Amino acid sequence: MFSPNLSDHMLRLFKCQMEKQKLPNSKAIWKFNAKLQISSGLVLLPPCEEEECDIFENFCSDRFLFVEVESEMGKRVKSVATYVRSRLDNIWIASRQWRFLSEDLNNVFIFFAIKGVGLDRTDLKINDVQEWWKNRKTTF
Image 1 (cartoon, rainbow, N blue to C red):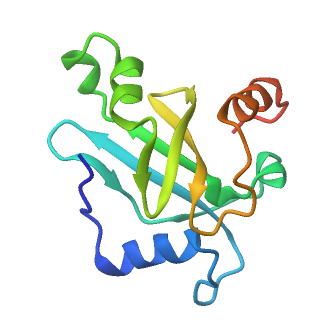
Image 2: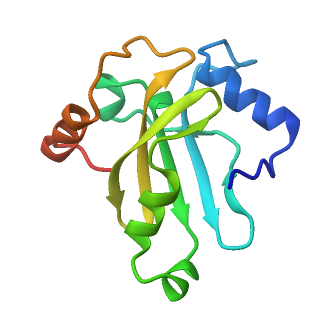
């Protein structure tokens, strides 16, 4: 399922940020992305710099994983949302456990890290985070 089609260097950067170690020459907020592809499964993408966003004030940006589902997936499965949740909800990636948070526009699914390396608060319940997400005023 997990396909590390990512260079060793980029996987190290991903894990390094997840563990809250300092990235070389960086003071930016990092957004973590992945693609879910029919042919190769889940592929981590290199972390990218993100503009400051209100949601990252409540929870650090490294707690969010944005998974883009390739458009072909909709032609192959009855429900993309059901498929994504069945494959990825509660998955461990880069020493963190990720839970489904929300489906965004354009086949992007958002996951939230609830356990694992480098997390300040591990007492969060996914239902509480989902409730906060529904009531937030900020959009991407």
